[in-house]
Each structure stands twice: as C-alpha cells, then as structure tokens.
Image: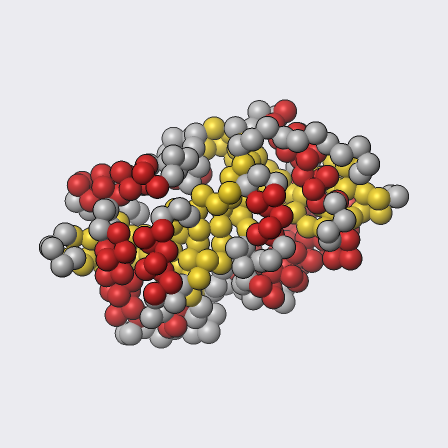
Length: 306
C-alpha cells in the first residue's frame, strides 16, 4: 500500500531520533487505510489489518483470537497525530461486532514517549515488549549444572514450558486450556534437533529451570529485519524456573550459560519477548541486561478502545 513519501520519510526520521537500535520504518503492508489531518492540515495515515486465529493456532497463547492491528504513520505530529488515528479506529469499530476474545493492538518503539501518552489516553496497556541485549555475556556460575536438553527430557520440559503460561495467564494474556497441546510440537522438534536449542539447569539431578532458544537472521527483506538491526540473533523463546524455585538463582545461572553459548555461536545479540505487566519477568530480564526496543500496546476486548 502506498502512502505519501514525505510521511514515510518523517516516520523513518522519528524512529532514528527515538532509538538508535531501531531499523528504519518499513513501508506499509496491505490493509484498510485510515486517514486524518491535524489542526494545521498535516496528513497522518494508518493501515489496519485484522487477524483471526483458530483454537489450534499457537499464536493464541499470546494473542486474542480476533485482533485489529494498527500500523500508524504520523511522522513528527507526535501525540496529536496518533490520537487522531486511534480515534479513527474507534469510529470504525463502532460498526463492527467485537467479541470477548478480541483486541486492538499497536506495536511501537518503546522509547517514543509522545506515543505512550496517546496509547494511555485511549485505554491501551503495554502487554508485550521485545527486549534486546547486546552486552558480552557474564561468566557462568559453576555452582549450577547447566546442560543441553534432549528428546528424553520432553516431559519435564513441557511441564516447565506450560508453567510459564500458568503464571502469565494471571498477569498478561488469558491462559488457554490447550496450552500444553499448542506448545508440544515445537518443543518436541527442538529437543530432537541436531543442535538442540534447549538448555536445562539442574540441582542434584532435578531440573529446576529451562531455556528454549532459536537462531534468527535479520537479513534484508526478512520479517526480523523490520524489528532488529542486521545480524544473526539469538532468540530466547521461553525461559522458566520451576515455581517453587523462583528467586533461587537458577534462572540467572542458566542465562549466563545460554548467553555465552549464543555469543560463541556468532550472535550479534539476543532478544526475547516479555510482559511488562509480569512482576517477575519485567525485573528479571532488565537485570540480565535486556532493555525494551518495541512495545505491544493492547486493549482487550477490542470494543473497550476509547
């Protein structure tokens, strides 16, 4: 979809000024176009996409089943421009049937304070964040045994992975009843890979924490390149400590080893998604050297948008 070149250029300039780690703003994808104009006549544009998921889609673990996602282009108009686009979205939703399992969402640079004001004014909250870490890894903790996982660890790994969503179901997106079934295929595949990207921390032979990771290449034209600087990135997909062992240092020791392994494998840096509303994750990951690059602002259900 085409928008005025000056508006795209202004959005690229906004990203560059807000955060030096951000890649340039991508041209808009296909979708329903929303247009508005500020008090001084400056045009702002949004592209709206609607995503519907079925009960067997793994994305339902973190996403509503019916999501209206807005891609705003408001250049240097700041809070006013984004406010106008969110008002336009609110007006469009007045003619739609929005169910309970629905959301409005915008993924936006975390450091754009003017945008945050508009999001809050319209009832959106920061439910997700993409955090990045580029620092050298700390030395491993020799007091904790960390090893790569294999196919024989599937049962304990799935139990731990499911425990993540038991907790985030309280503090972020609602938990799905079929969580374990949705997680199982990708976890089984990872455990059976030639280079299994899953690590376990043990204490006396008992598994206390798990990290499920992957490799992501941010190359020109790729989806990852719209979110990350160019390079090979280690993706920290799911990290969990056994509920009764949280705060005991297993997660910290596990990630020291994981960060070392990923750096040795050629990682430009590492990234992950976490919930800012999670009182455990939001503290833990910042202490591990991560900081937010993108934030997903949401309101659920979609009809609650102000």
